[in-house]
Image 1 (cartoon, helix red, strand yellow):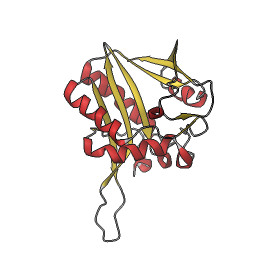
Image 2 (cartoon, helix red, strand yellow; image 1 turned 120 degrees about the vertical axis):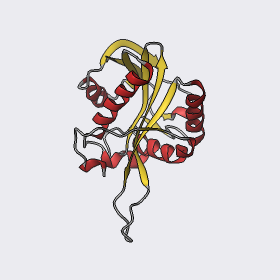
Image 3 (cartoon, helix red, strand yellow; image 1 turned 135 degrees about the vertical axis):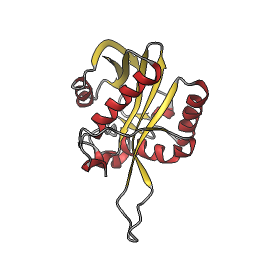
Length: 196
């Protein structure tokens, strides 16, 4: 499993397929919403209810990436331990990240690690792999992202990996259930950026 892998081993990433949408939706929602997200440290359950994404939105995003080439959803999967018959189980998606080309920079979003695997270095390796992929794929010179301002621990995690606050903010999309149901009235995003 991922938690037992060498912390410096290269992280294998592949481009998501449309038939991954159900599994990806379950993974992303489990990491950000509801009680399952509280197993890890990236939960938004105290800030937002409802869903983080759904299979239709993911299929649409994957299809757009296939056609336009300016967006990619990357996944990391690990073969689970052998079943009772001794055969290897099917790979399970343990992490994902979406990249979008914005000129000479990439936007990084939907950064997700399975809650039970958080804290073991997989997120750090996923972030490094995504940055490497964006540089190779599009020749970008920087990566930026938006993070909910109230997520101080997560912002600090990104800062330890070279991201810096730009001073820019963005409003939270109140009233759009596709992004969840806000549990407080003061949510907004801060923009973080890293030069590659």
